Image (cartoon, rainbow, N blue to C red; front, side, top):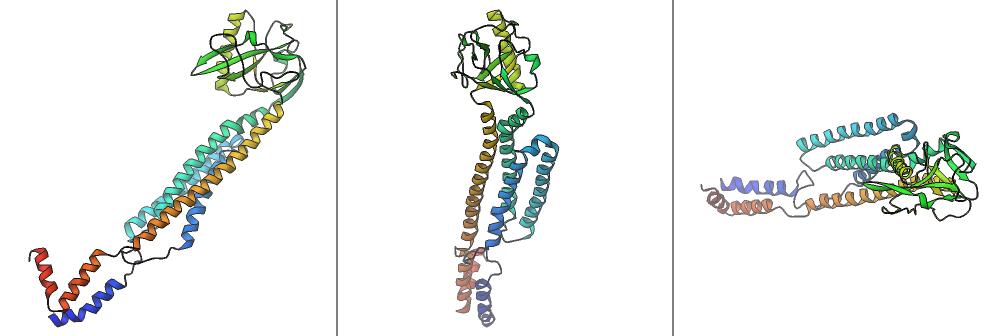
Length: 336
């Protein structure tokens, strides 16, 4: 019996010395660079795609197509998640599937949300304004709003300015400020104040006060049409309060963001969309590289510790070969 166990000692030692899996304690491993590279490129590509689809022209002209493309990414993610779940149940070694599934989901959500934020802040206002006309030579004292209702960019003649003394506001979660645009401090010939400069959180709530945008601009200036429906509602309420307070009339107000160079300001929105997109893409790449590095280190350290079970079994096997001491050890351990 002892001779048979002694003969098995080399076989047991070989069994522990040559494990089939590289992810076992005591076995140092080399990481495969191919899955590491793919786990940087794939999540980053998902972010770039989702952010791009929800940031630019496609989102404005073909929103259904943009959402369909983003939805297809989430459908593909379900297959990756299913593969990760299958690997965790059937493969004993750690795999990259779980990491890939988590990163693809995180990058898809982040890319979609950041792209929509970029679109709502810059792309949509830019495209909305560019769908309207450029109106030049406006004189607030003679031109009526009903003749330029399709204007997006307004260039006023010299002498047109803001009448701060008739400015007012409306307060709801934020302060919506309005001030009429007049010519040489005179009321319009029609007695209707049709053009109003607007802004947020740039006026006093206790008196006539307005310091929004380029309110100090002297000489020729212009305005950018405000097209946000949510903001327009509160600006109209502010104008209604100004009408009641100053005894003026403004039946069809046009709300403008006062600017010395409206066309250049609108073009800067388009440039800002691309700048934000490039910045977010670079940051996403940095995050993907950083998280992949952490995951690689975690995988690599799985094989750097020596197995306590293997060491115990080696000692017991050697004891068996010297005359049965190992049998006594196991018997004492399990109460035999």
